[in-house]
Amino acid sequence: MGSVKKDAICANSAVISNVLVVDDSRLQRRILSASLKKWGFEVQEASSGIQALEHCLRDPPDLVLSDWMMPEMNGLEFCRRFRKLQRDRYGYFILLTSKSEKNDIALGLDAGADDFLTKPVNASELRARISAGERILTMERELTEKNRLVKSTLDELQTLYDSLNSDLIEAKKLQQSLVSERYRDLGVAELSLLLKSSGHVGGDLVGAFPISEDRIGLYGIDVSGHGISSALMTARLAGYLSATAPDQNVALRQTADGAFEPRPPEETIEILNQLILDEIETEHYFTMLLADVNFATGEVRMSQAGHPYPVIQRSNGEVEFVCTGGLPVGLIEGASYQRVSVRMHPGDRLIIHSDGITECTNKDNELLGDAGLVEILSNLRQTRGTACLESLVWKMTDFAGDQDFSDDVSAILLEFKPSPTFA
Picture 1 (tube, helix red, strand yellow):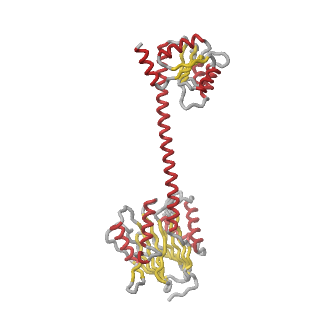
Picture 2 (picture 1 turned 180 degrees about the vertical axis):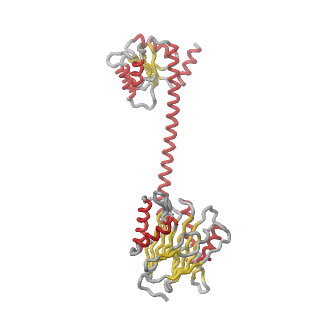
Picture 3 (picture 1 turned 60 degrees about the horizontal axis):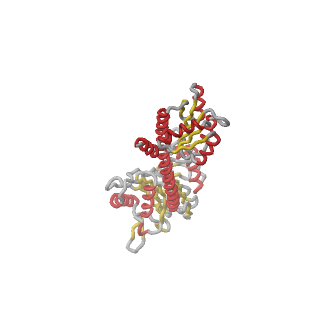
C-alpha cells in the first residue's frame, strides 16, 4: 500500500498526470486504466477516435494511449487530428498495436506518434515507456519556459528600444536645432551649412557667430566616436561658441568699453584645449577648424586642430587647400596652434568640411579623398548655396553606392558674391 501511495505522489508531481486511454474494447480500456490509476495517474477513457477528440478539446491530456485498429476512425487518423489541435503544451502519443513491421512503424511516426506498444501490453514496459515520455515532456516544457522567458525579455528589450529610439529621434531634432539657420545672406557673402549624422545623433557640428557688423566667426567640429556621448560633447562645445551670448563665447573677449572683439583663432583653440582637459571628464577629443572672416577686407584668419584642410575655390575654378594641420583638441596639455591668413576675392568660396566627406568610401573600400572632393567642387562650380551642399551629398552617394554614410558629414560653404570690392 505504501508503494502505491509513493508512486501516486511521484506521478502527480510529474509532467504527465492526465492520461487518455482510447480503445474500442472496454476490457482493454479497463486493464490499462487499472494500471495507470494504480500508479497515481488521472485517467479518462474513450471508445473511439471521435469521442477521444471531444475529450481532447475539453481537457487536453498529457499522454494518449490509443489503439491502432478501431472502427470509424483508426488510431493513425486520430493521431493526425490530435496533432492538429491547438495546445499550450505538447501531448505525448503512444500507439497500441499488434503491428511490428517497419513500414507500419514508419506510418505511425509519420502520423505523429511518439512511441509504440505491442498488444497485449506488458505493465512494466508500459511504465517504462511512460517514464521515457516524461523525460521528453520535461525537456519540452523546460524549453517552452526558457522560450517564454526569452520572449518576455525580448519584449522588454523592444519596449526599451522603442523608448530609446523615441528619445534619440528627439535628440536628433535638438542637435539639428543647434544649426538652426542652414542659409544666411550676409550682404557681401552667402553662408550655407550642412550637418548630416550617420546615425540618430553624431559628433559633428558646424556653426557661425557674429563678431561685428563686418566680421563673422565660423567653426567646424568633429568629436571622436559616434552616438549620444559625442552628441552631448557637441552640445557643450556649442555653448562655448555661443552665437547669442557673446560673454559666454570663448572666441570673444570684452574690451574696456564693454564691446567684444575676437581672440586670435589659435588662442581660442588653446583655451578650448585646456578647458576640455581641466573641466570635462571625458575620453573624447575633437578636431576643429576656427575661422575669423573680415568682409571689409576679404581676409580670413584660420587655425586648424586636426580637422581636414579647408578648401578655397577661386572664382576661376581653381582649388587650394590651406592651413598647416595641428593636433586635435583635448589630447595633449599645453598644445599650441598656428594661424593662417588668406585673402578672399569676389566670386571666391571657402569650404570647411569634416573627414566624413574625404573619407567616404565606395564598395571597393576606396576613399573619395581630396582629389575626389576637388573633382566634385569643379563639377559644382556653378551651383551655389544649399543647393551646392545638397549636390555634394548626392555626389558622395553616387560614389559610395549607398545613402547611409559610415561617418557624420558636415560642411560650411562661405561664398563671396561676385560684386563686392574689398579694401
